[in-house]
Amino acid sequence: MKSILFLDKIFLERKLKLLRGVEIFNLCLIRDLASLGCAVAVPAHSVWSGVIRTWVGDAPVEIIDLPRNIGDMAGGLLALKKIRKRRFDLLLLGNVGNNLVPMIFLLHWMRAAGRTALIAHRKPKPGFLHALKRLPMDVLAVNKSIADSFTYKNFSPMKTGYGIAHHDQFYPAPPSNGNPKPWVDFCVVGHLDRQWKGADTAEAAFWGLPDEVRRKCRLHLAGFSRVKAFPPQNIIPYGWVPFQQMGNLLRGMDVMLVPSRDENNVMKETFSQAAVQGMLTGLPLIVNNLPVLREKVGAGEGFVFNDVEGLTIVMRRLAEDKQRRMEMGEQGRRTALKRYVWNTKNFIDELWSR
Image (cartoon, rainbow, N blue to C red; front, side):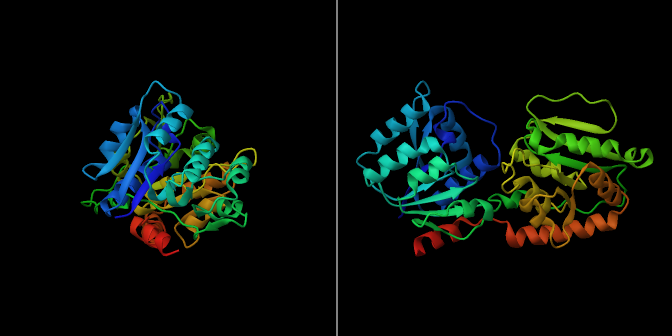
């Protein structure tokens, strides 16, 4: 049985956060590793213990519980103290983070793990790379741009790759009973309090539709930590939508918009799990012209737009063409199943084979 110490900066924080793409992926990964027979230990502040237990279910995961009333760094040091005499086959890092560097160094000095691997969900800061460049570490990056950041000779990048670990919850809606829908439903999904998610772009494009088209459409914005107020003009805001409800929400939609944008030359959208969830659900995509989004529609799964006017044009095109929506949605699901489904067994097998 392989033993794994799973270290993630989020679980070392004293406050619960909204469970978003990376956190959900890591929770699924922990569950899958345990289900494959790995002995998984996870240092986590007590506020996260219940969340982790809920997600892993009956999987035999050891939570190294850290008191809530101590700081993040102190919690990390306490975790080290609790495992100081233990040895693991693998130290698996759930993401980059400068605050993890001291723990990684100490674990390496303690020879706590036979090897180290990192799943990089975003670009590392220069300090992270500089600090760890001499430590042997396998790196899996979720996109090529992130992989290119790990240019130091001592890093051993695995192939770039990523996907949805919970894809079985996203599938197309059953065929209708012959009654046509009264609306064409567009949606934007994500942490929409963040400006870079582009909810404002979607709103502006929606208002740009001709009146006779807009009256037959609805724009769903899911979700906000605090629901915004909109005039009753077919724009429907949501609070935070729990992951368990997202599949049902998407099965009521017709088109997914992904208007995310980079800001200040910083990559914000590194993969877009929401886009892949939409593809798996059989929705055509309309995405902003970013590399990680553009690749999702390169084989006819949807459209790319460059500005608000361009988004309005393709929204109108799909609003008026049900057959096109169906064809793009079907292609999107095929692509997602082929390219963007995560397989933990393949990941761990490849890692051990290196």
